[in-house]
Length: 335
Image (cartoon, rainbow, N blue to C red; front, side):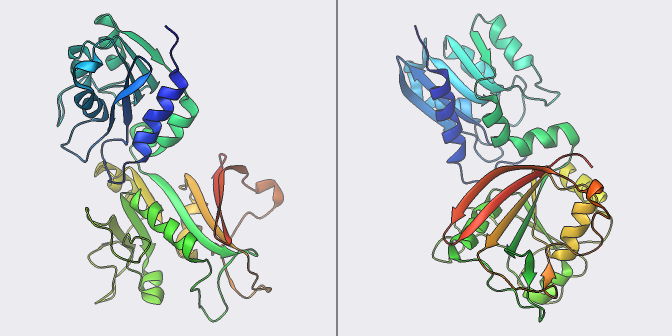
């Protein structure tokens, strides 16, 4: 039988992408069950304590899973945690074949899930659409390898790289489509970090709102961390203050199971994270506007690279037009 493995894995990726709830410390995994060329079960990892993607998909497939192929973005777990092992469910469903996007670096899994399935006589394939799957699971994979959250630094700027006018005003640099996208970005993160200066200047809520400006239903907002003292009555509350170095912040959040941290600035905080080499991805919203001088607030405060030889280069991993604005995702190379 000829299998459309790329098509199956894309369906599993779509299932993971459709999940709007945070799952940390579990990864956002998608899975589908395909029988005779037709998807008979679809699943995504549920919030902590809920079923993993494979079990959700198998439950939907029911008896149709016998002899079918399971496509899952991440290696199925083979240990008892909050839920029973997914490998047991796959084997018990009499599945014939399992196609996996990437292996799980978690020491409790790390090849054991694949080995268990093969010992049970299932055909196991690994590495289908591995690059795309790795990108979708970047935060989880990074956390399992480093013990720290994947750090996304978000900035909004004019085309000449200014995040505020000389008088400090910054609302609104970008249009409504870009601002809505920021809320989607927040919703994908487990925690948000800003400086106390931003809280004092802008008094942000840092919640997740929908297209109509309403607070999103169904779950609490991401955890909110302020670097410094929080003014009484600030709209960011409830939030926690942090007084210490950034390495300690990331170690503590990672130990708490935070997989993805969104840093929303301002310029001082952005510069600190950047110079420390702690940013894993930069998300910059560029507006088709120019302040036209050198007296506006730059993207990052503090000293930059002293010479072109010290410039850090990377690659654009994604670009997207949002209304009149442009979203640019950047990853830099080593320091």
